[in-house]
Amino acid sequence: MSGRLTVTCAIVVGLVAAGCQPAPQAPTWSLAADSPIKTTDAALVARIGRALDAAEHAGTDPSISQFHVRAATVVSAGGDEHVVVGGNTEYPWPQAVHGEVSVMNHVIARFGADAARRVPFIAFYAQSCGDSRGCGDCRDYLRATTEYEALMLVCGRATDHTIHIRKLTDGLLDEERFADATPASVGLPRDELDRLLAAASAARSGGVTLFSPPEGQIGAAALTSTGRIYRAAGADDAAFHYRYPVGGVLQQAATERDYFVRAVAVVGAGSEWPRVTYRDRQYGFETSTFATARGLPPTLLILANGQGALKATTFETALPHPFSVARFNPDAIERFLTRSGTSTPP
Ligand SMILES: [Zn+2]
Image (cartoon, rainbow, N blue to C red; front, side, top):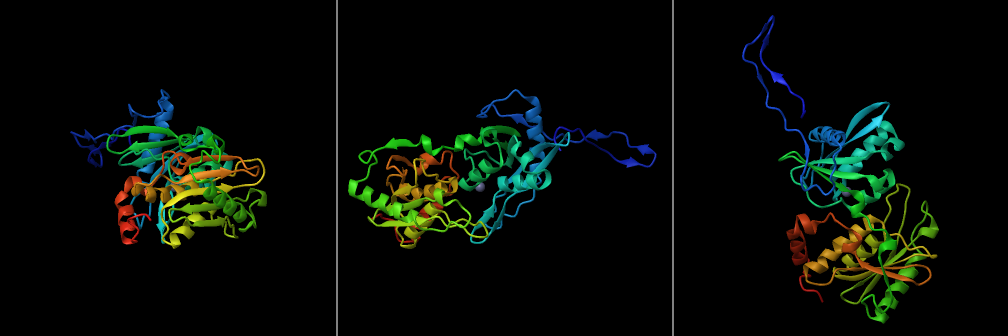
């Protein structure tokens, strides 16, 4: 444990050996000079340090990626502070329980959902600190389980024991903040835009809403570089393994090896803007990297409310500070596109 002086020496019954030397002291954690969030709160830094010392030893099972995500937080409950850890687990094809979901689930299991909402930070023990605010699904989960507006995502760099504090909200962008658009400004020929929006509207009437509110159902449609249009609606199920509409429509395009998607339209009902989960934005971002890897424009994300108003952005903008294979293993995209025979966009 860092910050605690330990002494190792031979202790024989009735005799303390002479010449005992203090063991090397683990370096304490300190705020990095270039931490995006600065703080002079020594108690907070110490609390983060306690979490990082525990996270270092958190169990993980990254059987596919071999990439360990070790996370921890400190929970105030019953007048005491408790360190809670979490670690990532992977299973085919490939799926994963991510470190931040793991730690928050452990907090809920030990101290309840109300205590979880008061968690001030999640600290990750890492060999290096990148810029990501986590995958889209973790953003959705943290929005649901924490007071996310104040939640700090902390990276503790093992090599120099420096603390880098970021805000989850840097990775969030509400639909209301997407740029307003008109049919002329979206960047698609009018006939293609009309076909795309009509397909998304038609998709909205389908899908499965056993447990999700029908009025929140959205429809999605994708326009690819071949000019084809695909459509999908969300579908829930008893296990709460929701099939996401944007993910669904992109999977349909990928099934036809139609990997270069020019635009995805999402249509809702009423005057509210349709909600695009961060998990769905993650799917869109990943698909957009296929296009940008080939020098094509990033995939557009177009929203239409029930009154015909439009907003337009890109998945890059809709998922700030992304977690993506394009950032940590771009060769994987190149290998995949080459192997799939789609190196040259139509
Ligand atoms: Zn995640």
